[in-house]
Amino acid sequence: MSTQLSEGVAGRVTDAMLEVSRAEHVPPERVREEVAAGRAVIPLNHARSNARPAAVGRAFAVKVNANIGCSAELSSRDDELDKLHAALSAGADFVMDLSVGPDAAEMRRAMLAACPAPLGTVPIYEAFSRAAESMEDLSDDLMLDVIREQAAEGVDFMTLHAALLREHVPLATARTLGIVSRGGSILAEWMMLKERQNMLYERWDEVMDICFEHDVTVSLGDGLRPGCLADAGDAAQFAELDVMGLLVRRCRERGVQVMVEGPGHVPFGDIQMNMEREQQVCDNAPFYVLGPVVTDIAPGYDEITSSIGGTAAAYYGAAMLCYVTPAEHLGLPTLEEVRRGVYAARIAAHAGDVARGLPHARERDDAMAKARLDFDWSRQFELALDGASARARYESTRVSADGEHDFCSMCGRKFCAVRTSRRLSGRE
Image 1: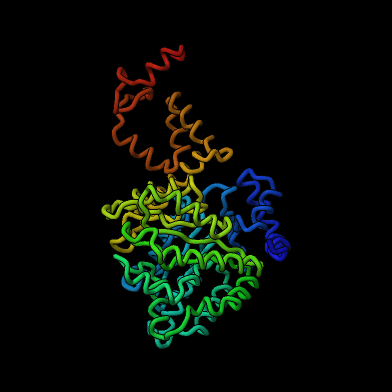
Image 2: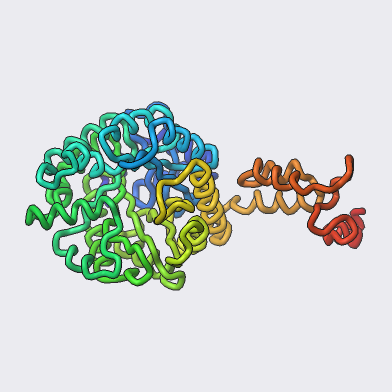
C-alpha cells in the first residue's frame, strides 16, 4: 500500500475517524488502519462544513444510500428536497443526487446546503446536460470541468464510469437487455460515435488530481451492471470489473479514496460469488451494490426483491447497499416510495450485520424481545426502525380496554402465547 494514502487521506480525516470510531464502537487505530489500507472509505470533501462523517467498509456497519434527484420529465426542486428529508428521516446514511437537465447544478447546490449526510453525484449527467444532450458536443474537457466544479462545491463522492472501455461495448450490445446504466449508456454511445476510448479512462490521472485536491472519494461506476437475470455474470460485467481492479490500484497510488459499485440483477445463488470476486479483483475495496435484485418479475415490489438480495450481499461482502424503491423499472419514486426504499434497505443491511456477528449489531433486537415479553409497547415503537408506522398499525386494530395492554388483536387475551409463556415462567 502506498504511504501516500496512509499519510495523505488518513491524516486529513483524523477528526472524522474519531467520530466514526465513537459511532461504530471501533477503536480509532482500527479505523485509520482500514482507511489507510483502502478497505474502507470516509467520503468527506474538505469544503463541506455541514456533513457528518460515515465509514463504508467491512469493519463497520453496512450503510444505506438513497438516490434522489430531478428527472428530465417530472419533479421539481422542492419535491426532491422533500424526498431528501424523507430519506434522511428514514435513516439513509448517504445520498446521491441523480438530477439531470438544465437545473441539475441548482439542484445539487440546494442538496449540498440541506444534506448532513455525505452527498454523491454522477458528473456525466451534468456534462451531457451542458452539452445540450448532444454527443457531438460532449467532450472530455467539459467532463473534467464538471468534475472540477462539483468537487470545488463540496461533493463528497462521485460515480465515475471509467472502467467501461470501448472494447466492452460489443459484449454489452449482445446482451438480452443491453446497457441499463444511464451513465454507462451515454459513454458507450459517445465512444462508438467518436471512435475513441472512454474519456475518463484516458484522462484518469487528471481526474485523480482533482479528487485528491478536494478529498473526493471515487465510486467506480458499474456502467455494465446486469439489468436482468439473463445478463448476470456475463463477459461484459466481469470485463469491466477487471478494469475496476486496475483503477482501484491507481486511486490508491495517488492517495484517493475509492469504492466499487456492483450489480444489479443477480440470481440469489450467484450473490456470494459476485461479492467474493469483487473483493479478490479489487483488493477488498469497499463494495457498494444496487440491491441486488433477485427476480425480474416483481415491478411495484422491487424494494422487497432488492432487500432479499441485499441481505445476502451484506453478509457475503457488500459494505453499502443502494436502496431500490417500489418505483424501480416503472418511474420516478414518490415521497412515500423513497421512505419504503430506505427502510427496506436498512432492514437488509441490519440483517446482514447481525448475521456476520458485527459487535453490538444484535443489541437492539434483544432489547425488542424483552420489550415484547414485557408488553412494553412504547419501548417496542422506540426500538422499531419505523416506530411511527408500527405504532399507527398497532393502534389501528387495538381492541383492548383502557389499562389493558398485555395482548394484541391477533390472538386476543386468552390465546396470547406470550401471556401463557409468562405464566409458565412465573412472571404472571
